[in-house]
Length: 355
Length: 240
Ligand SMILES: [Fe+2]
Ligand SMILES: [Fe+2]
Image (cartoon, rainbow over all chains, first blue to last red; front, top):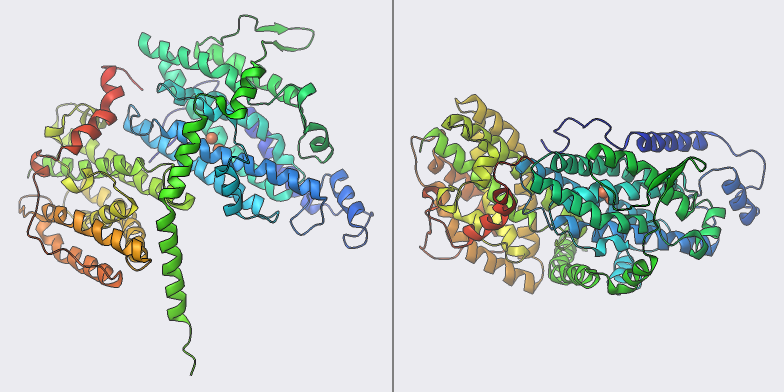
């Protein structure tokens, strides 16, 4: 009864990327079926075994030995991804109460609920690396771990819900599709599931903008304004330019990361240009043009100084997002304590009485 | 109550309940509960859409679900007062949901067997959803009632605060497709069993506020509608 109860517009996005997710899923099954030939046995030389698995494009599983730095890198990355899903519920959740039709309200509620689900699978994937969800949540609440900076921008109009779906979920998919082939099995599998749902979100966001852009002049202006505000922050989601990125080289060698920030950003720009044309909206970049030599669009880089300011905590909504999360956590403490106390009482009652 | 008024009343209960539950998104005590509350809100919203659409058809004036949800004022809403009360803390929200579901389960079950095919179809679908809402809320009422000292105190306060609003749900109406007064025994049996297990009591008060079915609401509804309707009303005639 909710979600996708509309005909997809022509040229709706998501098709090509969804195909890549499916290919990654097939590769995962093949890798599992393909025995690793020769090389070290897992209990003989653990380091050689780890290197062999990575080289053979097989998956490292929780029971396998792994370098401490590999484990730490994955925990940090998966946890920050999980935190982003949870904090990301706020900017869109901001419009649930005011969604302009009951159908849109249902789709948006379901979407924000999906994001909570993504947070849960990602925390579960991180837990396979030997850290608990409670510990990770503490790291978020203390500010020792970050979440995606994009969620520190405000949703000022209904069109922002569309722009987030189209651009932010779109950028997330471009980032995450390669992670479906990540060398750590639980993360790769979580990403396949997440990417499939994100591609619905992107399509729904695009559809919101399409409806607005073909609606009244006020609706079209609302759509254009939101694209104007979300375009550069979305480009910044891919992180600093390659020269300045600190973690990339090692992550590439471990096959946690497979493309550089700039490669992914370019892929995103190339994908969006045609979609913006179909929407009838303008991407706010006067220097955006096709480069025949590179077979890609030239475009203006986002303001990386702004990105650094937002990462450091001085974006428009950093303080509110964290205060909201901390308040929900603190307000729920008595409820969680009660659930634990009730479960303990039940367990006690069930215990056989010693004679 | 005519079939139109009855359908509108049941649909408005579901719509306003969904609106209140949606306010919990990103604020629940744990992540699993955020997902559960969104599920229940989606079920209520789904039932509301079917009922409001049908109410519009019964009326025959060309109003669809959005016209009814977004373009009526509070005096034209027919929901019970229980659903429009503010969420309060998690205990108050669970008390509201528990009493609502304990009423909706027998209501939808009775509707599933009524002569009107459309209402029967909504009843058949919604009663399964309501049974889950009832289980979920009852479990929390028990956990909070029989949890810690603080949770017991809060849950008892919540029951005391919300209980008077249940009486309105069962005002007799022999002309309605289902006479609400026939649902009371079932409701009382469910409530007694759960409150007993939760070590909670019902307050001794004869106060029984009402008026929702006649469009006489609490002060809260107008604020809820102001927020829910603001964008839709700002763009008359637009499609979304
Ligand atoms: Fe997500
Ligand atoms: Fe998403």
